Image (cartoon, rainbow, N blue to C red; front, side, top):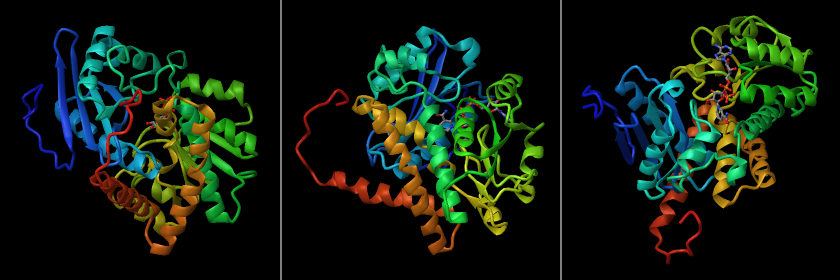
Length: 368
Ligand SMILES: NC(=O)c1ccc[n+]([C@@H]2O[C@H](COP(=O)([O-])OP(=O)(O)OC[C@H]3O[C@@H](n4cnc5c(N)ncnc54)[C@H](O)[C@@H]3O)[C@@H](O)[C@H]2O)c1
């Protein structure tokens, strides 16, 4: 039964906790999904989105929170997986009262869930949420936060891409390679900068005129093409999906020219089996949640008191994790996405069970 709308829906989940939060005067309708706290508090962003139905919002929070558990585990963080959605239009529905009401609900969970930015929420919003709640990351630098997480997301994608190149071609250098970037948003722009600096050629596209203008002015050497179909069938060595989910699907995989896929977008595989279709075509797919973990590593660092260099060092290790994962996938004879899930699940099981060994409480830190 839908709590807000009365709709019926069925979700088959293994989640620990799902919390529905409502504050009618401010218009807040939020759902917080905690998939697992086996490795620590469940960290994941807040998506503010005008879902068509409550079932759609529930489905999204379930999928996203599960995904965060896997991402945080593979990133080696002492954090579980959670995510929240605010059901509404971020352009018209966002207010100080709504964000603070949301902060009070997050606070009520006592640190089982730690929030951050996601689609539709920004660093400035997290500063407002933090006025009611201590379990907030992704705040502005003025408030001791890690700021814009796309900085280290792009760095991590770049490291994962280099590791994949080393695996596929024997050396990690991207110099002379042609990389196709779809989506010149916050991450795509920074990734383009890293690639050009390394000596790669970049082919790019974006549906937004402003993003295309940015490329024309900032990097005239970028080869801009009309759209995604034109980009993926062009002569590229590596494909970096940096726009929306579902980039690898029944339409794109059969015609994809690249030998490697490594990009920032979440949920790139449109459906189960697409990873196998990529492998059958000899395309090396580096799992999205492995290479795009830089953002969560960046904001998670706030929990210790943010230090950019320490966070960057941790994100740089995505290179080593990617090398190890791709070698293990080869040894097992399975697509890298299968190995990624296995590695993430193994760490949740092996490290997560250690809390069964009783120890005296540790000295309380700012985070409890
Ligand atoms: N920002 C982060 O720290 C972070 C972390 C992990 C994952 N991600 C994921 O990476 C992706 C990019 O994130 P971002 O922060 O750069 O988002 P963004 O909104 O800043 O950029 C996305 C860009 O993609 C473009 N786009 C949308 N649809 C397109 C299409 N069909 N063809 C071409 N371009 C299209 C948009 O115009 C926009 O410029 C998203 O999927 C996001 O979920 C981001």
